[in-house]
Length: 424
Image 1 (cartoon, helix red, strand yellow):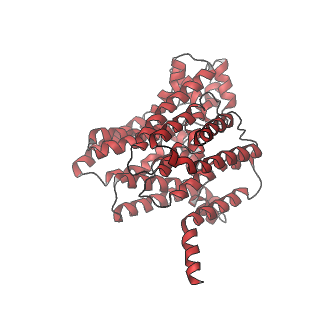
Image 2 (cartoon, rainbow, N blue to C red):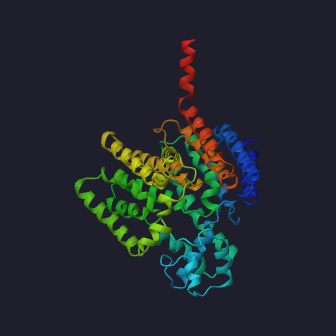
Image 3 (cartoon, rainbow, N blue to C red):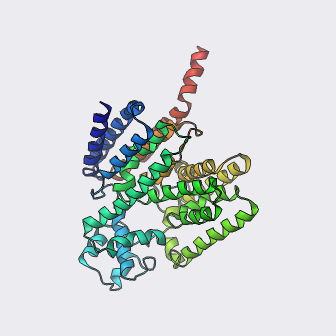
């Protein structure tokens, strides 16, 4: 019965990735509700399988998503556009797509198709050089549009397979904690089919753990510096590693990080003003999506409309100060330090796209309390796609309230019930 159930689950995932319509709230709600319903039931069958078998199931779930055209996010159009520019020896950080066409840049019909479908025509690329290499590969092989997408998905599948093996070998994880990453429909769908770079990020984080524990600090410094070449926001995590190193290793660590920044200065930030106004700066002063604590800061600033744009900066600075306070007073190891740092970064970020949260579920261990909270958070992250399609006044506030109550109940619900039972 358990084997049949998981075959059914894989079929459900296959049809889901080919059926999503982000602009249809009923479609989004029904599919995510069905997938998470099946996923929650799947926990009862975990005792019938070994961790290795669950690992292979996780890989199977991801394989069946390959070939689906991403429908929950249109970022992949920008990925391929950047890859097109690189393939024609054009710096993707110098021109926005709109500027490139205005200045008479030559484009093929396929490139025009990408341009018409992307949502960032007026924005500068925010994807560091390491990702630009990934975006360039489909053009290097001269593939068709469908083959380009499939190649990128296959590359991410390889990273995910490596991630599952590394997570599965973690003796601190229970089957339940492993399944929160391996079988979670949000992770399965966002990690491969939607072509987001988070699997690469998870791989680098897990690899850095291994190198640190093996005391191979040269490799650790190099891998950690690559964090910034995948996602610049991970500079938030630098203190978590810095304070754990010896004085000598701190020097090499800072050198590696500075080298990575230097690469970014001459590539991503070659036009700093453009990035501030219509690039990375947008995530600080203009973009807001599914924010948690930043939402409260924005609400507090709402009577002062001229200053609401500061909510993102204030939130991230606040989260950073809390992180430094934690690192100073709390005895920790690298896993805990990185997990707490990533959790604070996500909690205080003004933008929490569903795929941003994937590393959290990969970093869970038995030492982290309330793992069920992260299961609930993954469910709400999936349903946050409703914020794209439902534009009714106060819907985001209503969504935030339901999510907050649910997460609060996960943490304090049972203690509260036990308390009132004792009182009665």
